[in-house]
Amino acid sequence: MNDRERFVAWILGEPVDRPPYWVFWGPWATTWKRWEKEGKPDSLKDMDDIRAYVGSDKVMASATLPVNTGPCPRIEPQVFEETDEWIIHTDSWNIKRRDLKTGESMSEFLDFPVKTREDWVRFRDTWLNPDDPRRLDGNWRELGRKWMEEGYPIQLGNYPDTGVFGPFRWLMGDEQGLIAFHTMPDLVHEIMDHITTIYLTVYEQVVKEVRVDVVHMWEDMCYRNGPLISPKMWDEFMGPNYRRIKAFMKQHDIPILSVDTDGNPDRITPVMIAAGVNFLWPMEVAAGCDVRDWRERYPTLGMMGGIDKRALAYGPQAIDKEMERIRPALEKGRYIPCLDHLVPDDVSWQNYLYYTQALKKLTGKE
Image 1: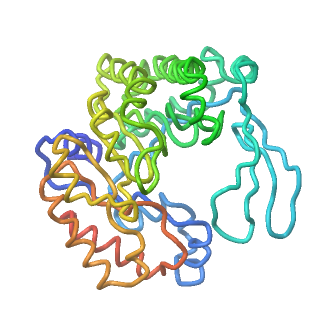
Image 2: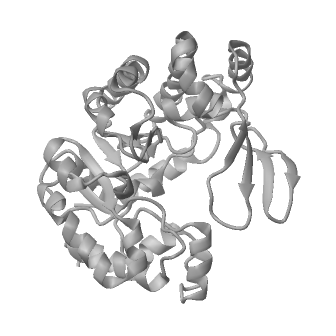
């Protein structure tokens, strides 16, 4: 089997020669700088180089078709204030943020572009035209043909521009967006319906020329204690759009509907599965996600992640213990063992290499 065939079959519960060996998550920027001082070869310039270096199977993140499903034309960031420690700027969704320059940290979100229906109409008409031909600019056709020949699993959609809840929160922000579910439900429906129409309009053109294996949705709609909205709200506001996407996928033989949400999505997982989601990640250990338990309770759900990234800081013994902890989930299938997020800067280059080789052995690629 090639890497694409193995991945698709594994997630769908079909026979494979071995589980996928995916070195998916890379380092924080500060971790990368540490590794450069600890012996990482200078020839390794990015995560695709590292994946090749450690012998990883081809991962879907390396073959994401670069079509524009976000603001179009692209919004140019602006800098408003900058010191030695932080910078205030707007991003690709016109969100005003303050970011630290001295280390890794979440942004401080200062202002979001949509507060009223009038703001939404203005943003929609300026940047969210589904039929803007510039959405299909670029070399995605050539890349798609190359990736098909090389056996990559090919993905449509990625952070930060493709999701239902994810881009909605970019527009309204967490607090005002969650309040809007109660005070302006019609606007929430309108925004979510419209951004889904963007995806389907663009994807309809792409699938005419490239074989697609995964439609991916970035949501990040959970924290350590659970989801930010109830299962009922998920089904009312997001469910119809997921079902639209799933119907499109069925029409075009796209097998995997993938969702990335940090935190603990347990309470909304049944409604996601009912709407067609069959691949969920990264299964954060610190948020209480134990893939052994999830494998028992959701036997038809494909998963990735679930290895505690914090263990890598403690060295080989802790890494081996994590491998043994998640082994029962791997043995039951449909689970790709992987870290549960980016690698923090308390992890040495040697420990990261040890992890990759322990994972390689666990999945039987050696």
